[in-house]
Each structure stands twice: as C-alpha cells, then as structure tokens.
Length: 114
Image (cartoon, rainbow, N blue to C red; front, top):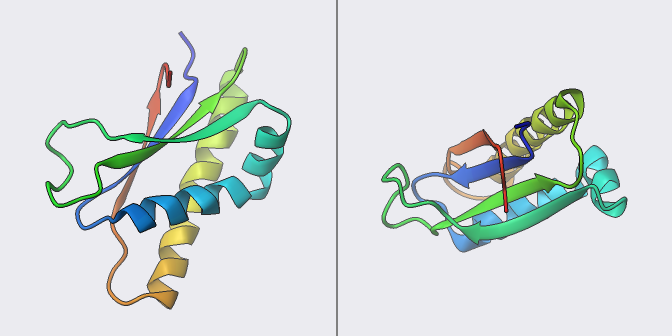
C-alpha cells in the first residue's frame, strides 16, 4: 500500500502552543496550502502515540498530514520533502523569536493516517 500520511511529532519539551504554531506554519507552506485548498491534503492535530519516545512532560499531540485519494509515490515524496523543509524553517524561526532551543521534531511516513 502506498504511503498516504505524514506524521510530525515534536519531542521533549514541546508545548501545545508549539504544536499549534507548527501546524499553522505547515498550513501556510505554499505547496501544502495549494493541496489543502484543492481538497487533496488534510492537516490534523491528534493525540500522539505513546511509544515512550516523547517526554512525559510533552504536549502529547502530533500533526498528521493526510493525502486524500490515489497518491502517486512522486507526489508523496514532494509533500514529505515540503513537510521536512517546513519543519526546519519553523524551528529556525522559533529559535529566532523565542527563548531557548525549539523542540526536536520527527517526521515519518505512515501508510494510513486515518
């Protein structure tokens, strides 16, 4: 089965405001915004998976980007790269405008985001 979702988790020390800010940032990324506007991409905030890799003090939320309909591997790769780039840009921006180091982020592919 082709990948249809991308999961973004912020690690130790992430707050709910970090999750909301990153979600808003990704929604404004030009390529991702175009896919959202056409109905081909949904950006969702969800309870995070409890696999022990996140801090117990963390927000417990993650962002899931779900591609809707038939997804070519090439489109998935483009979206995945855009998400990774957007996360890096958000971390750089947060570092510039807020105190302290931004939380580390993990971007992974999922076969089904629903």
